[in-house]
Length: 348
Image (cartoon, rainbow, N blue to C red; front, side, top):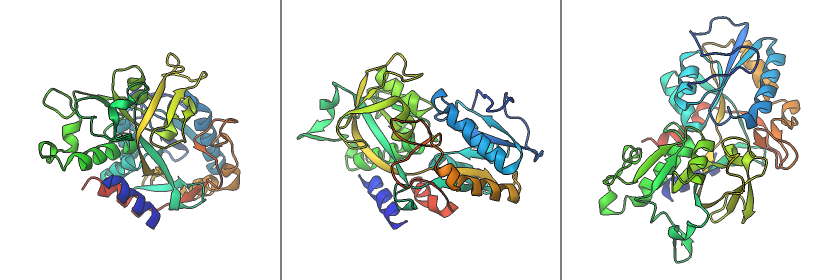
């Protein structure tokens, strides 16, 4: 935990369409009272076709553990997913840290169930990465004395993910505000100032991709000069061409077998100009709409060796596709609400 807090301290300083996993589909309705059915919610990022097999596999794990039918609901908007779990219309959701904090604030009965560890098998390195990326060929604009800086991002066209995204909004806006607050012109800069573009604004134009894939596509389609998105949601579509993964200056390109929204962007390249560690997001539950016995069964199933060794969930790079890359000892572990306090601190 101390390592995570140090990482975050360093960081600060430096759903309208639904589709069923099973046969059910359609918009989420009234508050769930029928405990013979469990509803699982996905963010737009994991709602993409590239994650379908993983979504289905997790549904099966929950169904096997509880003996109850699982309706999986995909979304196209962060706010719908957050509202669904907070209101009780969804019982389980895979979320980012910021979305979880927002849902918990709306309803304290929403709590984290499990989170994926880092390669150490502990929470000490349970992180993913928030990127600022630019199109290959423009990267020299963001260098000073041979090093990448944020000095020249002002006045550019910028794409975030969603204002409820941790790595696609909360982290980059915090970094930008900290970086530019020493300048008189921007000493009072706030996150609200970064969500709208214009000649008198920080950015000339601001877009929201509504998913990490969407933000990356905005960049590669040259609708944006710079985009914020994360490594994990983009992993199925890209490969490193030059440099090391998750390091400033690394060049990525879109793989030949990339699915939507990258099918027409194969071979396009982008460069990382900023990389920030972020706490892994949880599988969250609404404890007021799920029986404790089911919560216990789902937690046991998620933390079981069979799930840890399931390559449709913990995938081996270059061999299978899944939700979390297996590099060493990654697995799901229980996590407490307080672990996300550093994310809460970003809003203060």
